[in-house]
Length: 238
Image (cartoon, rainbow, N blue to C red; front, side, top):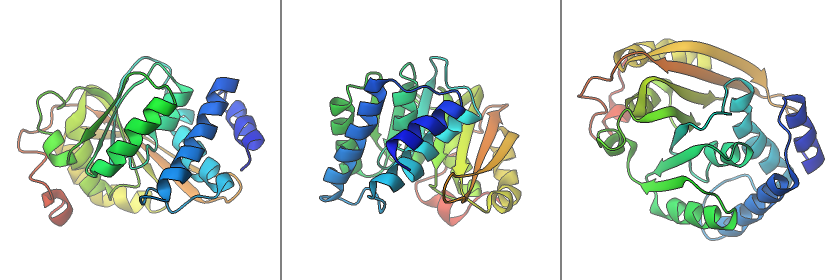
């Protein structure tokens, strides 16, 4: 996907990028590749693939959910900033918090925010399990996002405790979303969520399957969740 295709395919979805926003994506790409030589941020470094599989794919959440309001987003395990930083570039009014367990990725994100001139972004070095019991963050976010972090039965325990009642958890998945949902249904319900919508589509050009799962937070998460670091992955709610 070249820059013109990126711009044109977003336009089809009703998203018009300014010259400044296109420059931000270009700077993002250059910074990602430069830092990737020093640390492992992504296996994808080819420009066309970064624009398709990281930038466009991240923004695809906005094809199915309204990000135009000034809401707070927490992105769990965002790595090099996906999906929240591309969404922040497109929708500057968003307030974004990224929590990641690797401090070197937080260093990259702080540098990235500076070179992109992003405001209202916060990067926190923590495990999602301990972050989720912190009263400053627990059940305070309008939207919590996660992309390719863990299977739904585990991911729900990392993300739903952070969503305020009435807010949404948006999980971005490749294939096998139906199987993950079937296994993760008990976890979603136990943690106070309910599947509101599931959108399935193909990523342009390579035609690989993508799924966006929109889970509404209907009631408070029981106090015992999330459990201690490592426990959700070893003993998921199933």
